[in-house]
Length: 274
Length: 89
Figure 1 (cartoon, chains in turn cyan, brown):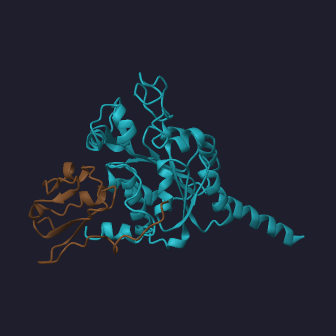
Figure 2 (spheres, one colour; figure 1 turned 45 degrees about the vertical axis):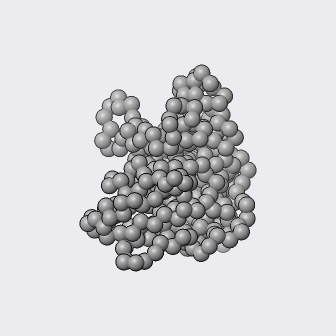
Figure 3 (cartoon, one colour; figure 1 turned 120 degrees about the vertical axis):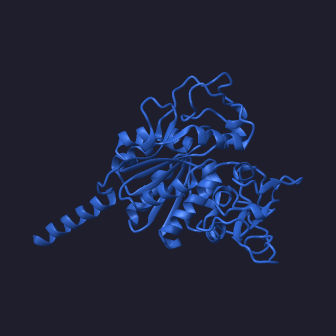
């Protein structure tokens, strides 16, 4: 285990202000470490990786890593990523979004990116709340949970990211948590390698906004909650109320950029025949 | 990971990067770390470390480094040189 931290430090931009802005105990730091370890495990050169991030706590991740990075407008991370991937299909485009970014403001883009099946890896960091703007209720806040805007409990059903993107047509869909870091490493590594649209939902606790409003006494009880309330998909029995983690969908359909390259070649061949 | 013998490792915490969230303290299987009076993680029972790597993988601030123990070697205070006057964002 000797060089895990050293390896992460090799991929950080040390001219930025460290320690990073995430609150103490925020799971986003663990997911950032997982992402860096996955890119390192695949031996991708730093110049071939593009991190596109939206607005929110998770948007800060793009600032700290030494890849090609774009910090885009709210909810539109996937649209920028689509443009980058279509312009240069050689690049590995990783899109980092929060739950508000991916599911509400950019919900439209998420389902359509899944429908197009474009070769982007979307990493949805689900902390079940709008953390940066003061703890408003997000589309992933579980029913009955308190937030700043729903002080007596949220009345709405949350989105199930995994089912949403599976139904919309993504190739690879997985869910991990920031407590199960080694599993998350494997999921992100698989997702980056996979052709077509791949989504990894990473559950990441927010002790400052979500935990404070929902009777968690700090960061540690939230990680204990994650440990207790998640179950591997393979071991899950029917009617288990715990959250399943693992790979939900694994298809091998060609991505949009491959189909586009094929179409271009076909049309060019037709033109030469004339 | 192969070596599960105790006392083979040195636990280094970079105090400037640690935010004292307590994840490493709570989940360490052999209770190596404790929070100091300053609210930073501190290795107090370094000889009990079994080199499982949990703290290194789960430190959100990349502040813990587990390295093979060399007698008399001091922990570096900063991961890569002293801090520069970084840009704010």
